Image 1 (tube, rainbow, N blue to C red):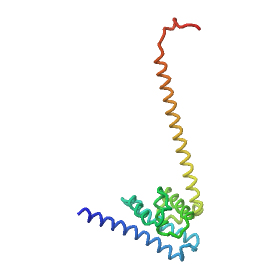
Image 2 (image 1 turned 60 degrees about the vertical axis):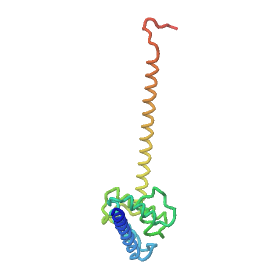
Image 3 (image 1 turned 30 degrees about the vertical axis):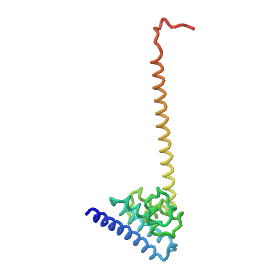
Length: 188
């Protein structure tokens, strides 16, 4: 009984993945070619479709399983183990898109996601913010600033722990010294 439920769940998950990939590929084919020569509007339309699929998967209870399944569908091992679900999705659905372009697309979409942009408003968001590349650059800059702040915070915490440890050692040393009445201390 449980095995039957597992296979039904797997089949349902595979169908969800397949339908998402089909919709992305259909959008890409409507634009004319994999090279996306339809201009910036076409690219943004494609990214809006990718973001819609991603949002439906992200909100699904088995997002990690979906990511693992997508990784299994990728033909080679060039994906890093910590690749974002968006990157995995784009590389599986549109394998002919160059990795550097995929990185720009992922960063631009994640920038919109951080700003809580709804999928159907993504193209307008890109337009207002100055385009895909600018959004990707801004996301990269924010990530770098976050990484630096996290590193500084971690170093501050380590420094605070070191100061506390030193203060405790000094307190132990003071307690370990024999105390002598003030009037009996030697001058030399």
